[in-house]
Length: 316
Ligand code: GZL
Image 1 (cartoon, rainbow, N blue to C red):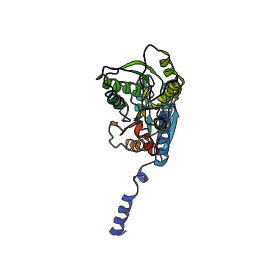
Image 2 (cartoon, rainbow, N blue to C red):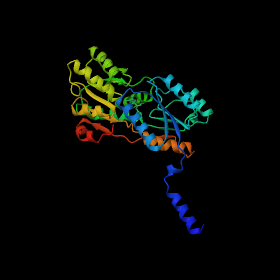
Image 3 (spheres, protein in one colour):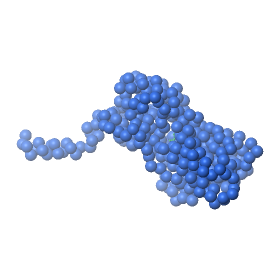
Image 4 (tube, rainbow, N blue to C red):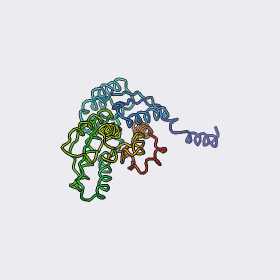
């Protein structure tokens, strides 16, 4: 073969898409559940991205139970998948099963939510939002609004996410860190609505029945609980978004529709569309390329004033 022909073949080979060289990988993915619009969009993004990337995806829905996630991870280990990824329903209780994955030489990627483990080498990387900052953003919006009524005290009720989950712990932390700068803003009641519409409505009904203090503001850790609470507020004969100002997090389509209807005042975006980034990350992890330990996603804040214009652009 002439030198020129050899050069041409080498050059041609370099232009083949990288994917042509990367051996197809098998990923075991353990998902929290199907509790919210955010989760549905997150699952759709992961499944579509796996298909597009030629990744064989073994997907398990844990129905918001940690024991189901542990079982799924053990099953992935037994099936000798190339990589395990999961969104941990709660922060703690993962050391044992992650040690089993490490002993089986299967790398683990955390997506969406973080874990608290004694040994950080039990997972390779964590890709997800900064929930503390999301809580801060929600509080900053409220501080700006409160500044327009300088003397009014604002009683806040809070619908927390799943007890023990990173988003619930961190969103509360970020929100409280910022509102403490204005002592007129007080959280008078706080309880978990488990990130679902049904439980959010139920807890808001109980808040509304306790008539010792007027409720001025609802801070909901996700849009689904806010939408459930909106139903409870209307059934109590009050106007959501006016009699009670409502702040929530996720930025799902339902929130934009509620804002357009004047029933929700602001939503802080939490991007669920992690699928493509996750598949690229999995390829790098399996081929032992160095990856960042913590990867965050860019997110915005959407007040009701921009909802109608923004709604057609929303991807989830
Ligand atoms: C946030 C995610 C949360 C969403 C909820 O990244 O873990 O879980 O805010 C979902 O809607 O249930």
